[in-house]
Amino acid sequence: MASTSTAWADSDVSVEVSIDGPRRAVGVRAYTRLLDQVLLSLEEVDRVALPGRVARLEWAVEDLSFKGGLKAVIAPRKVPRLRPFGTVSTPALSLVSGIKNLHATPEIPQFFSPGIVERVEQIGRPVGDNGIERVEIRPLSHGSVSAVVDFETVSNARQAINVSRRSWGSIQGQLDVIKANTRSGPRAQVLIEGTRRAITVRASADQANTLRDAWGKRVLVGGELHRNVLGQAVRLDMTELQVLPERSATSTFDILGISPNWTGDLSTEEFMRQVRSV
Image (cartoon, rainbow, N blue to C red; front, side):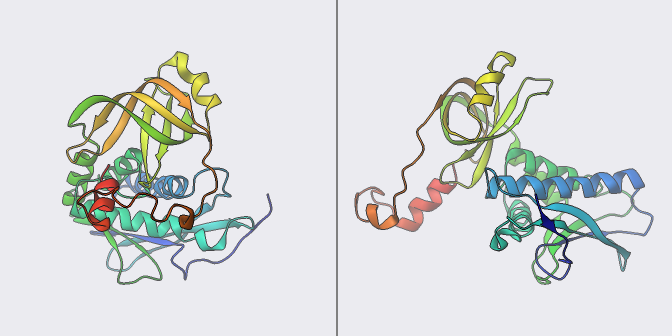
């Protein structure tokens, strides 16, 4: 696929990762692991926000410096020509927004999966060691907008993916990101319709072909559903999977007013807040 190399460091496509601590506070391996977790988070947020066969960005370290703290700029090395321009900033802005949300509350943010939340916890691993108080991540062109990974963020991240209760249930959405070579069996990710979040699906070894055949399709997956303290679905241990027909192209005007009593006694804002907390 043809692609172009562009200097994106002056836009909100790039993120700056700052470690608040002495120059020699972080070992080389710990620092490379931290940057790797940021890189993987950017890639995975992109897949949740823009599922399917979307041309993906390639990332590289644009700059390293020590100005009051250890800083690195991670920027796209290549932006595919087929990538919609308006979506190029999605990974950076969504990652920062999600981490800000985790700093405030133990919930899985929009465009996040439990795996991304776990990566945020990994980013915060150096906090508390050798004088390090926090890790800060921000889009370069948004100087006043930043996300902080500190003790509070790490604690909320752990609570967000910690299973509080279990029940039998089902989830519906697009199946994506299949990982077959895991110790506990194949795993997949379902992008839940209407929530802009992803849930991890764990399957048994004999269900691997079922997952592969359903990749990229709308599915209804049933099994044991694990939820966090806020009631959000964290993962599902699959017992059955059904491929659903694709949605027909219907505009909002086609359905406007079709069910005026759908939200019951709730206002539209209250109803949407309840739906997004699933």
